[in-house]
Structure formats: C-alpha cells, structure tokens
Amino acid sequence: KGGKGGKDSGANYNINLKNAVDGQVVTRFPPEPSGYLHIGHAKAALLNQYFAQHYHGKLLIRFDDTNPSKENVEFQDAILEDLELMGIKGDSVSYTSDHFDTLYKIMIQMITDGKAYADDTPVEQMREERTEGIASARRERTVEENLKIFQEMCDGTEEGLKNCIRAKLSVTSPNKALRDPVMYRCNLTPHHRLGTKWKVYPTYDFACPIVDSIEGVTHALRTNEYRDRNPQYEWVLKAVGMRKVNIWDFSRINFVRTLLSKRKLQWFVDQGLVSGWDDPRFPTIRGVRRRGMTIEGLRKFILAQGPSKNILNLEWSLIWATNKKEIDPVAPRYVAVIDENKVKITLEGGPAATFTEDKPKHKKNAELGTKKVMYGSEIFVDQEDAQTFKEGEEITLMDWGNAILKTIHKDGEIVTGIDAVLHLEGDFKKTEKKVTWLASTPELTPVDLVDFDSLITKDKLEENDDIKDFVNPNTEFHTAAVADLNVRELKEGDIIQFERKGYYRLDKPYSESSPAVFFTIPDGKTVSKY
Ligand code: ATP
Ligand code: MG
Ligand code: MG
Image: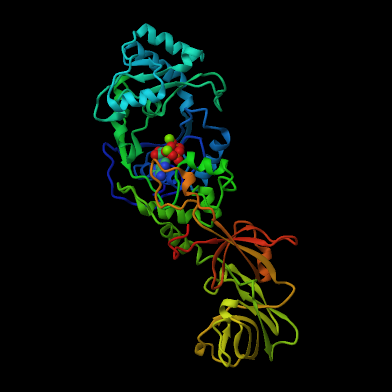
C-alpha cells in the first residue's frame, strides 16, 4: 500500500470506477481559491486521493481560478497548507489559468463552428427565458458578429462588458443545465496570477471538462447535486472534439446547523460575526482544528462515511465522537475548579505546610510523563460537587485519599465552606464520590473555559432562507476557573482533559496578565451543540 498522493487513506470501499486501469487512473481535486477549505472539501480531496492510491495512479491538484472577483493568493496558499496538513499531496499542482490561451483558442473555434454565440440579454431576462424555454433574441447572430463581439469582450469595451458567450446547445431541453449555458464572461477585475492580461474568463462549465481532458484526468469525481450538469460536461468535450473523461458522482457531506459554502462563510467573516476563517465555530479545516479536532479524527471520520450517494445531513456529535477516540488515550489530565462559589474545605489532620508530589499525567499512558500535584490543609472543590455532600459522609479526594465531612456551612442553597477530617486509612472503594480538588495555594492558575454553540439556529437552511434571519445571537460562553499549576507549561494547540469536566484545547497560553484560554472540545455526547 502507500502509493502516490500523500498519506495512505487506509480505507477500502470495494467500489470499481468504470474504465479504471490499474496504474493509469488520474483524479483531481479542483478547489476555487475563493475561501478556506471546509470539511466538505476535505471529503472531496480525500476521495480523490483514495481512488488515485487505490489504482496506483495520480492525484492532481488544480486551482479553478476562473473568477478574479472572488479569488486571491491568500486563499490559494491556505488551501495548499491545509491539504498538506491533511496528508494530501498532489502529484502536481496546476491552475485553470495555465490554460487560458488554449481555452481562448478553443472558444474562437467553437464560435467559428457556430456552436457558441454572444448574448447581451440582461441577466434577469436570461434567467426567465431559460426557465420558460424561450430562445434568446441573439441566438441567431452570425459567426462574424459573434467573433467581433467576443473581441470586444476581450478588449473589455462597453459593448463587450454587456455580453457573455453561451453554448448553442438547447433552448428547450428538459434538463435546464443544457439550455445554452454561459461559457465565457467579461470581467475587468485583475486576476491574482495574470493581472490584467485577460478581460474574459471561461466559466467552470466550459473550462473544467477541457482542462480535465488536457491534463489527462481519467476520472472526474463530482458531487451528485450537479448530476444534471454531467451531460453538459460531456457535450463540451464532444463539441470541441476532445478526449472523453469518466464522470463519477459522490454525495456532498452536510452537517446540521452548518453552512458549507465559502460565499456564506465569507459573509460571516465580513459581518464580523466570527474572528476569521479559523474561528472555532467554523466548519473550515482550520476552524475545527482550533476547536480541538485532530487531523486523524477528521480523516478517519470522513473516510468512514465513504462516498455514499445519499445527501447527508450529519450530526456533529458523530465526528466529535470519532475525535474523542483519538484524543482520550493521549490527552494529559489536569484539574480545574470553577471559580464562581468554589468551596473551601478545611482539612483537619491535613499537612502543616503544602508539599508537592509527582503524579502521572495519564494513568493509562506513562509515556506522557508526570505532573506536580500540590497538597495542603485547605483545598477547593466545585460548588456543584459540594451541593451533593452530606454531613458525616466519607468522600474520596482523587489522587490523595478519603476525607470525612463534618460540618457543611451554607447560605441558602449555596455551600460556603466545609470542615472535614482527612481519613487516609479509609477505603476509596467504599465511597460513592470521587472528587477533583485543588490545594489552596498561590500557584492556582486562572483559566478561561470557553464553549461554543452553532452560528445558525436552523438545522438546514433552504435556498430561499435569508441567513440574517437565522443567525444565533449567542454562541460563545465563558466560565472562569482555576487550574493546577501544570497548565502554565502548555503550548497553544495542546489538547488536554480536565478530569471530570471534559477535553479542552489551549487556544491562548497563560501569562501573568491574562488567564489561559481553553476551548471545550465536544466529545460527541451532547447532540445539540456544535
Ligand atoms: P463552496 O460552495 O464552499 O464554494 P464549491 O463546490 O463551490 O464549494 P470548490 O472550491 O469549487 O467549492 O470545490 C472544490 C471541490 O470540493 C469540488 O469538487 C466540490 O464538489 C467539492 N465540495 C464542495 N463542497 C462539498 C461538500 N459539502 N461535500 C463534498 N464535496 C464538496
Ligand atoms: Mg465551485
Ligand atoms: Mg458551492
């Protein structure tokens, strides 16, 4: 196993691609550099990698850079970085814009052959005519006229800007994708690679099949929501007399209450509703990593889903549960106590002075090394735990021993303090409660525990829904806590467990002036939260 395209996928789908010859299959992942990669793109990229490896062929990465109004170098670089992070490496990286000269020549030929025409019908009207099956008034323009207008488009003149080039394919086909689709547009925005060299740009519908054919792609994997457009893809190659490419459909991945569209994610960024493309509430590769998803967890989850042809609307809990299996064996364990109304227990028979002992960071994983546990006669426990205590009860202080609770001081429901006796001879097997605690020392470290909710309130946004109506106003929740001194050594990105609380990823290390910021990593148990 192994092969090209980067890391071995480890999956095995038992799917045979039509016309696949071992050693000769070429797939491609064609992102548009118009945003950061999200987990939907991860699925497409991983599947293309899978089939390239499965058939000992090649995986191409191609930037579909045909719309300068949406694309830039920042996005392009970020996409390559994220692919690398996921262990996906193309056998080559190319750009649709590498082929603009060829595409231009092919379009001249198509127009000359009477297979395409220039149209200046206003957008709205064009949409209506297409829906109704009405021919454009420009459909019968002469070849000469069409060539002249295409030239105007290339020059970016006023006349050129009003026009687009449409394939002369069909007016009334029941498949509306075949009703004279747009093949070229005029756009004066400079291109991020080629500057102002071009003022006309091929559409994805025109460029994709041709460039696939030129670059030797044997199998074009496409999401099945565009299945209607497959005949159009095939028509283009036939119209220009180029080598056929096998199309293979797979299903989009979707998650509840989640936008997987760069355009919509860009809107959240532009509105300042998130901190950026790596916001922990974002379904981007960077966002989910910042939230505490491991690359292994992500790869395993997506590959386990497989190419399934159903449109999926997955719960986030599924992917987080997969992630938990990755992090649980390797996340070092620390202790945190919620600051608000934390309860001081005064221990009779406790040590006269605080002392420190080394304890394993993970009881089942010695490789993680040790941490310092501080002991003292005054300790803090969570208010939530204290409220369950009864006078006379024997409890176990984890990593220490038992204590018997004597007096519980209360102010209404709130426990304000506890007097107890340390009872280290007590049997921890006989106690009902094993409690996390922290010695009251100056080394207690302030931490900010942050949890998040999904950015939108509706499970599945429909085409006509306005996002604005479904923006969740409250998606970030802070809880102040104190943690053991060991968390001061953690680095940004470290994943840990606070015992009995859950998994966290350190987003901002501790400093004298500000608490360590930890993001809660969902563990798949809570269904409603992202
Ligand atoms: P977006 O709407 O986010 O811009 P896109 O499809 O326009 O998505 P591209 O950069 O053109 O973005 O997509 C690159 C590849 O990723 C395409 O092959 C596309 O089919 C695939 N892809 C995009 N979203 C998903 C998804 N949710 N599930 C599976 N594949 C996806
Ligand atoms: Mg696209
Ligand atoms: Mg899209």
